[in-house]
Length: 210
Image (tube, rainbow, N blue to C red):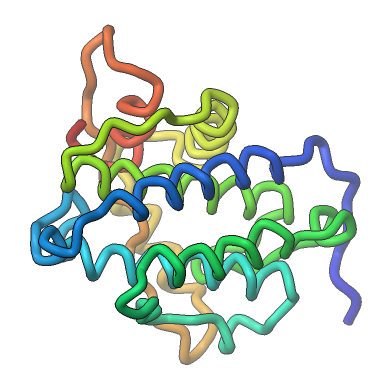
C-alpha cells in the first residue's frame, strides 16, 4: 500500500537542524564527572539521558528512511565513551533523513500517525526539551533558536491542546499496534509566570518545571 501523501504546508527541516545543533553543543559541554547527576527528565541521570536522546535521533533516521515501526529503536542508544562523537554521527544522519517526498507522507509514530512535517516538528520539540534537560542538569545556558522553539510550541499546543493529558494517553494506548510498548510521552503541563522565556514556556507545556 502506497503511503498517503499531502502537500507540505511548511518545511521544518531548518528548525530541526537548529534544534539538533543545540543538542550537539550541549552534549559537547557535558563533563564526564556529571554523568551520574540527576536531570529534570524523571528517572534518568545525565548519561542515561544522552543515550535516550540518541534513541530519539535514531527514530528520526528510522522515520525518514521509512523503516517499519517494529524496527525503530526502543531503548537508549549507547553512544559510547565519546558521547560528542556518538551524537554527532547520529545527528548528521538525522538532519538529512527527511527528503521532500517524506515530508508529504504520513508517518506512523509510536503513539499516533502524523504528516512528515508534523513528525519532524515533534522531534524538533523532543530535541529542544532534552537539550534543556541536559543544560539544566549540567549548569549550561545555551542559546535556543527562536524559530525552532516557535515551531515546536505551535505543534505541541495543537497536538496537546489541554494541560491535563491522562485521558488522551489512555485512549492512545488502546490503539497501539500489537507488540509495540506504549509509554506516556508527555506529562501534564506546568503553569509558568508571564515573564517566562519561550523555551521555559515550551518545556512547561511538555510537563517540565522550568
